Length: 273
Image (cartoon, rainbow, N blue to C red; front, side, top):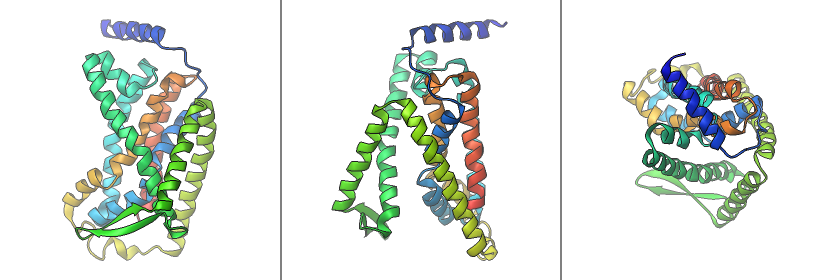
Protein backbone atom coordinates (compact mmCIF):
# COMPACT_ATOMS: atom_id res chain seq x y z
CA UNK A 1 0.00 0.00 0.00
CA UNK A 2 1.30 3.45 -0.90
CA UNK A 3 2.27 5.92 1.79
CA UNK A 4 -0.51 8.36 0.78
CA UNK A 5 -3.14 5.65 1.10
CA UNK A 6 -1.80 4.71 4.55
CA UNK A 7 -2.00 8.32 5.70
CA UNK A 8 -5.55 8.65 4.40
CA UNK A 9 -6.56 5.42 6.12
CA UNK A 10 -4.99 6.48 9.42
CA UNK A 11 -6.63 9.91 9.20
CA UNK A 12 -10.03 8.40 8.46
CA UNK A 13 -9.69 5.96 11.35
CA UNK A 14 -8.66 8.69 13.78
CA UNK A 15 -11.43 10.96 12.60
CA UNK A 16 -14.07 8.28 13.00
CA UNK A 17 -12.78 7.56 16.48
CA UNK A 18 -13.35 11.21 17.43
CA UNK A 19 -16.73 11.39 15.68
CA UNK A 20 -19.80 11.38 17.97
CA UNK A 21 -21.59 8.06 17.72
CA UNK A 22 -24.47 8.92 15.42
CA UNK A 23 -27.18 6.35 14.81
CA UNK A 24 -26.71 4.92 11.34
CA UNK A 25 -30.37 4.64 10.38
CA UNK A 26 -30.21 5.70 6.73
CA UNK A 27 -29.95 2.95 4.13
CA UNK A 28 -29.01 3.19 0.47
CA UNK A 29 -32.51 4.17 -0.68
CA UNK A 30 -32.87 6.79 2.07
CA UNK A 31 -29.48 8.32 1.23
CA UNK A 32 -30.16 8.30 -2.52
CA UNK A 33 -33.59 9.83 -2.06
CA UNK A 34 -32.19 12.49 0.28
CA UNK A 35 -30.04 13.70 -2.62
CA UNK A 36 -32.72 13.18 -5.25
CA UNK A 37 -35.34 14.97 -3.15
CA UNK A 38 -32.98 17.90 -2.65
CA UNK A 39 -32.28 18.12 -6.39
CA UNK A 40 -35.90 17.82 -7.50
CA UNK A 41 -37.36 20.98 -6.05
CA UNK A 42 -38.80 24.14 -7.56
CA UNK A 43 -36.08 24.06 -10.22
CA UNK A 44 -37.72 21.28 -12.22
CA UNK A 45 -40.28 23.80 -13.51
CA UNK A 46 -38.81 27.24 -12.78
CA UNK A 47 -35.38 26.06 -13.94
CA UNK A 48 -36.80 24.68 -17.18
CA UNK A 49 -38.67 27.92 -17.81
CA UNK A 50 -35.72 30.22 -17.08
CA UNK A 51 -33.24 28.05 -19.01
CA UNK A 52 -35.53 27.97 -22.04
CA UNK A 53 -35.93 31.74 -21.83
CA UNK A 54 -32.15 32.24 -21.77
CA UNK A 55 -31.07 29.59 -24.29
CA UNK A 56 -34.18 28.60 -26.23
CA UNK A 57 -34.36 24.95 -27.32
CA UNK A 58 -30.61 24.71 -26.67
CA UNK A 59 -31.48 24.65 -22.95
CA UNK A 60 -31.29 20.89 -23.34
CA UNK A 61 -27.54 21.37 -23.90
CA UNK A 62 -27.36 23.58 -20.81
CA UNK A 63 -28.89 20.85 -18.62
CA UNK A 64 -26.59 18.19 -20.07
CA UNK A 65 -23.46 20.36 -19.63
CA UNK A 66 -24.53 21.38 -16.14
CA UNK A 67 -25.03 17.74 -15.21
CA UNK A 68 -21.59 16.83 -16.57
CA UNK A 69 -19.89 19.66 -14.68
CA UNK A 70 -21.61 18.80 -11.41
CA UNK A 71 -20.89 15.10 -11.94
CA UNK A 72 -17.15 15.82 -11.92
CA UNK A 73 -17.56 17.51 -8.54
CA UNK A 74 -19.87 14.76 -7.33
CA UNK A 75 -17.32 12.05 -8.17
CA UNK A 76 -14.75 13.84 -6.01
CA UNK A 77 -17.19 14.05 -3.11
CA UNK A 78 -18.19 10.41 -3.62
CA UNK A 79 -14.57 9.32 -3.17
CA UNK A 80 -14.11 11.56 -0.12
CA UNK A 81 -17.37 10.33 1.36
CA UNK A 82 -16.13 6.76 1.09
CA UNK A 83 -12.75 7.56 2.64
CA UNK A 84 -14.16 9.82 5.38
CA UNK A 85 -17.80 8.88 6.12
CA UNK A 86 -18.48 11.93 8.32
CA UNK A 87 -21.68 13.90 8.72
CA UNK A 88 -21.35 17.45 7.43
CA UNK A 89 -18.62 16.38 5.03
CA UNK A 90 -18.78 19.55 2.94
CA UNK A 91 -17.35 21.40 5.95
CA UNK A 92 -15.29 18.58 7.44
CA UNK A 93 -13.21 17.83 4.33
CA UNK A 94 -11.70 21.35 4.10
CA UNK A 95 -10.83 21.04 7.80
CA UNK A 96 -8.98 17.76 7.22
CA UNK A 97 -7.16 19.11 4.17
CA UNK A 98 -6.49 22.78 4.95
CA UNK A 99 -7.22 23.42 8.61
CA UNK A 100 -9.57 25.41 10.80
CA UNK A 101 -9.77 28.67 8.84
CA UNK A 102 -10.68 26.92 5.58
CA UNK A 103 -13.26 24.86 7.44
CA UNK A 104 -14.73 27.97 9.07
CA UNK A 105 -14.95 29.79 5.72
CA UNK A 106 -16.52 26.80 3.99
CA UNK A 107 -18.91 26.29 6.88
CA UNK A 108 -20.03 29.90 6.83
CA UNK A 109 -20.67 29.83 3.07
CA UNK A 110 -22.54 26.54 3.40
CA UNK A 111 -24.60 27.90 6.29
CA UNK A 112 -25.65 30.93 4.24
CA UNK A 113 -26.54 28.70 1.28
CA UNK A 114 -28.50 26.19 3.35
CA UNK A 115 -30.17 28.92 5.39
CA UNK A 116 -31.62 30.46 2.23
CA UNK A 117 -32.59 27.23 0.46
CA UNK A 118 -35.61 26.39 2.61
CA UNK A 119 -37.18 29.88 2.31
CA UNK A 120 -36.56 29.84 -1.46
CA UNK A 121 -38.37 26.52 -1.79
CA UNK A 122 -41.23 27.67 0.44
CA UNK A 123 -41.70 30.82 -1.63
CA UNK A 124 -41.57 28.78 -4.85
CA UNK A 125 -44.21 26.41 -3.44
CA UNK A 126 -46.48 29.31 -2.55
CA UNK A 127 -45.97 30.83 -5.98
CA UNK A 128 -47.10 27.53 -7.50
CA UNK A 129 -50.13 27.47 -5.19
CA UNK A 130 -51.18 31.07 -5.91
CA UNK A 131 -53.63 29.78 -8.51
CA UNK A 132 -55.65 28.31 -5.62
CA UNK A 133 -55.25 31.01 -2.94
CA UNK A 134 -53.63 34.50 -2.99
CA UNK A 135 -50.30 33.50 -1.42
CA UNK A 136 -48.27 35.85 -3.64
CA UNK A 137 -48.81 39.02 -5.62
CA UNK A 138 -46.84 40.28 -8.59
CA UNK A 139 -45.27 43.69 -9.20
CA UNK A 140 -43.38 45.12 -12.14
CA UNK A 141 -39.87 46.17 -11.11
CA UNK A 142 -37.52 47.45 -13.77
CA UNK A 143 -39.64 45.93 -16.50
CA UNK A 144 -39.62 42.49 -14.86
CA UNK A 145 -42.41 40.74 -12.99
CA UNK A 146 -41.49 40.15 -9.34
CA UNK A 147 -43.54 38.01 -6.95
CA UNK A 148 -43.84 38.88 -3.25
CA UNK A 149 -45.72 37.17 -0.43
CA UNK A 150 -49.08 38.42 0.76
CA UNK A 151 -50.17 38.39 4.42
CA UNK A 152 -51.63 34.89 3.86
CA UNK A 153 -48.40 33.89 2.16
CA UNK A 154 -46.26 35.02 5.09
CA UNK A 155 -48.43 33.09 7.54
CA UNK A 156 -48.30 29.93 5.43
CA UNK A 157 -44.54 30.31 4.99
CA UNK A 158 -44.08 30.43 8.77
CA UNK A 159 -46.10 27.22 9.15
CA UNK A 160 -44.11 25.42 6.44
CA UNK A 161 -40.79 26.53 7.92
CA UNK A 162 -41.94 25.30 11.34
CA UNK A 163 -42.80 21.94 9.75
CA UNK A 164 -39.18 21.67 8.54
CA UNK A 165 -37.99 22.27 12.10
CA UNK A 166 -40.26 19.49 13.42
CA UNK A 167 -39.01 17.01 10.82
CA UNK A 168 -35.37 17.73 11.69
CA UNK A 169 -36.04 17.68 15.44
CA UNK A 170 -37.38 14.13 15.42
CA UNK A 171 -34.25 12.78 13.82
CA UNK A 172 -32.82 11.37 10.67
CA UNK A 173 -34.76 8.08 10.68
CA UNK A 174 -38.10 9.89 10.62
CA UNK A 175 -36.75 12.27 7.99
CA UNK A 176 -35.66 9.37 5.77
CA UNK A 177 -39.06 7.71 5.96
CA UNK A 178 -40.97 10.88 5.15
CA UNK A 179 -38.51 11.89 2.44
CA UNK A 180 -38.71 8.50 0.70
CA UNK A 181 -42.47 8.86 0.33
CA UNK A 182 -42.16 12.47 -0.83
CA UNK A 183 -39.53 11.61 -3.46
CA UNK A 184 -41.66 8.81 -4.90
CA UNK A 185 -44.48 11.36 -5.09
CA UNK A 186 -42.22 13.95 -6.77
CA UNK A 187 -40.98 11.47 -9.37
CA UNK A 188 -44.52 10.25 -10.09
CA UNK A 189 -45.79 13.81 -10.59
CA UNK A 190 -42.88 14.67 -12.90
CA UNK A 191 -43.39 11.55 -15.03
CA UNK A 192 -47.13 12.23 -15.27
CA UNK A 193 -46.52 15.86 -16.28
CA UNK A 194 -43.90 14.91 -18.90
CA UNK A 195 -46.20 12.21 -20.33
CA UNK A 196 -49.18 14.56 -20.40
CA UNK A 197 -47.23 17.31 -22.15
CA UNK A 198 -45.76 14.93 -24.70
CA UNK A 199 -49.22 13.56 -25.53
CA UNK A 200 -51.23 16.79 -25.49
CA UNK A 201 -48.95 19.80 -25.94
CA UNK A 202 -45.84 18.67 -27.80
CA UNK A 203 -44.94 21.09 -30.61
CA UNK A 204 -41.83 19.98 -32.45
CA UNK A 205 -41.64 23.25 -34.35
CA UNK A 206 -40.60 25.01 -31.13
CA UNK A 207 -37.14 23.52 -31.56
CA UNK A 208 -36.61 25.26 -34.92
CA UNK A 209 -39.08 28.19 -35.23
CA UNK A 210 -36.54 30.73 -33.91
CA UNK A 211 -33.45 28.60 -34.39
CA UNK A 212 -32.14 25.91 -32.07
CA UNK A 213 -29.73 28.38 -30.41
CA UNK A 214 -31.42 31.80 -30.73
CA UNK A 215 -28.87 33.39 -28.38
CA UNK A 216 -25.92 31.21 -29.39
CA UNK A 217 -23.63 29.48 -26.95
CA UNK A 218 -23.66 32.61 -24.82
CA UNK A 219 -27.25 31.78 -23.90
CA UNK A 220 -26.38 28.12 -23.34
CA UNK A 221 -23.68 28.94 -20.79
CA UNK A 222 -25.65 31.78 -19.23
CA UNK A 223 -28.53 29.40 -18.57
CA UNK A 224 -26.24 27.03 -16.66
CA UNK A 225 -25.21 29.72 -14.20
CA UNK A 226 -28.31 31.89 -13.87
CA UNK A 227 -31.44 29.83 -14.49
CA UNK A 228 -31.26 27.47 -11.54
CA UNK A 229 -29.49 24.55 -13.23
CA UNK A 230 -26.47 24.54 -10.93
CA UNK A 231 -28.73 25.38 -7.98
CA UNK A 232 -30.80 22.26 -8.69
CA UNK A 233 -27.90 19.88 -9.21
CA UNK A 234 -26.15 20.90 -6.00
CA UNK A 235 -28.72 18.92 -4.05
CA UNK A 236 -26.46 15.88 -4.50
CA UNK A 237 -24.56 17.09 -1.42
CA UNK A 238 -27.22 15.67 0.89
CA UNK A 239 -25.67 12.25 0.36
CA UNK A 240 -22.40 13.68 1.66
CA UNK A 241 -23.95 15.52 4.59
CA UNK A 242 -25.54 12.28 5.85
CA UNK A 243 -22.53 10.06 5.23
CA UNK A 244 -22.00 9.60 8.96
CA UNK A 245 -25.58 8.41 9.40
CA UNK A 246 -25.79 5.68 6.77
CA UNK A 247 -25.27 2.01 7.56
CA UNK A 248 -22.82 1.28 4.71
CA UNK A 249 -21.09 4.50 3.58
CA UNK A 250 -18.58 2.75 1.32
CA UNK A 251 -21.43 1.51 -0.88
CA UNK A 252 -24.22 3.99 -0.20
CA UNK A 253 -22.42 7.34 -0.55
CA UNK A 254 -21.18 6.87 -4.15
CA UNK A 255 -24.55 5.46 -5.20
CA UNK A 256 -26.41 8.38 -3.64
CA UNK A 257 -24.11 11.13 -4.92
CA UNK A 258 -23.56 9.92 -8.48
CA UNK A 259 -26.95 8.25 -8.84
CA UNK A 260 -28.88 11.39 -7.87
CA UNK A 261 -27.12 13.49 -10.54
CA UNK A 262 -27.63 10.86 -13.25
CA UNK A 263 -31.26 10.34 -12.28
CA UNK A 264 -31.95 14.06 -12.44
CA UNK A 265 -30.32 14.33 -15.88
CA UNK A 266 -32.46 11.41 -17.07
CA UNK A 267 -35.65 13.02 -15.77
CA UNK A 268 -34.75 16.55 -16.86
CA UNK A 269 -33.90 16.06 -20.52
CA UNK A 270 -37.37 14.78 -21.56
CA UNK A 271 -38.90 17.76 -19.75
CA UNK A 272 -37.26 20.19 -22.21
CA UNK A 273 -39.74 20.16 -25.04
